[in-house]
Image (cartoon, rainbow over all chains, first blue to last red):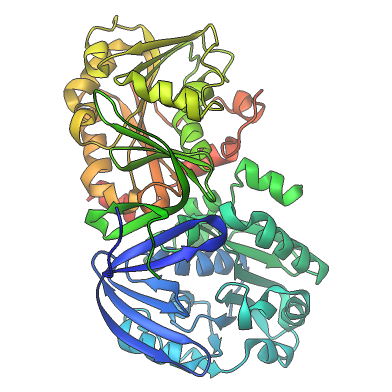
Length: 285
Length: 285
């Protein structure tokens, strides 16, 4: 069946697949200094934000991604007080970070202020914690920000960026990881979105582990979860620990967490660490 | 971006989403006694089989579904000797079942012989165990077959059917489950595909648990896994046990399994049992 002009479609060229959402109307369209930002009202997924034609998030399923980018890292650090988010302009990751009472400061370092302003307007639920006194916003280049960060000043870095093409490419490479490592404290942890296990195990996930370890991170681990609006509907977050085994989990606090989630819980945390057979082979191979 | 006529698209009307694969050419198209069966050669997913316009399987990702329909059930039964597959005409589930050396007989009860013949022609890898002396083929109505099955004669029933519409609807209801329960031996186990956790938790998964328990099954459990070509890219198998807790796992045999898989392993088995927060609420609610 063909799709008429009432559908938004993202084509995943290398995989020969495409994902589409039926659209009621376009709510917003702007060319910012960095990229084209669009917002659509869809039939079944609530609102949809795209950047340069790629799906960033939908109301319906962003909870999975934002929770899996945040809570595993924060419950794997013994005392996450100082958190920095690189990217994450829609503020959904920031909101999840601020659910943790241990967090004393959360800095969102987003290159494009317009993404945050558009999110405030069209995705108010994601921005519900922007007024939290622990939240800080810096709009500028995350790579330069990290280069200039005070050594040992961060507990958890979350890299919530677009795909490793264009301006985000530098966020997937050894020089940036070295700067992250220096900025992290002793038990420091880094979490980065690492694309689709089906499409990118050898092209992105395995090189990411290699680059992180070459940069000096002691241990790395990829977590797997569904994400319907992203290519293949299956996604991953890769964790890197500065000096401790990364599979550590503050079990009691996690099991008795004092906030609500929609995907994440302690069983899901442990489950996300299970590596499918073909991924295991592709990461080792 | 619009998709031209070189794409095969399945629209998921209720969800307002669609999944597409780029097609090189159509290899087969027939109207069988029961349904329209088509086979395409795609750009990135190998061959694709559709029935009545719905994706059944692709070369690239069917391994996840077939493994998760089979190995969790077989490793959760203490001694699975006699297995019956209802549906499963493409023979992929049968192939996985026959990897277990404990299995003495595996009967595939498929209503449409043409699905199996088309699969033999276009998906030979899935049919690689059809010549196994333990394999039996019965082409006919699974509901009637189960009604007439000898009580206590089956260890594991796998219901590998299309969606619960049309002829498959009866496979999702109490009378059929009662017949399954009677046909199962003491430690008997049933495994059934139960659609998308995101789209069908309240409409299909929860009623399935209810019907299974009303039919007399002691315990039920849903397993979650990615399946890129199915609606939402996220899928599930629901297990029902006649007389024992269904989360049982033959740990040692599973950890040291004597055959190769591409998705399943013991960690994945345990991980698939983790229930996301919103699903837990929707199953209880």
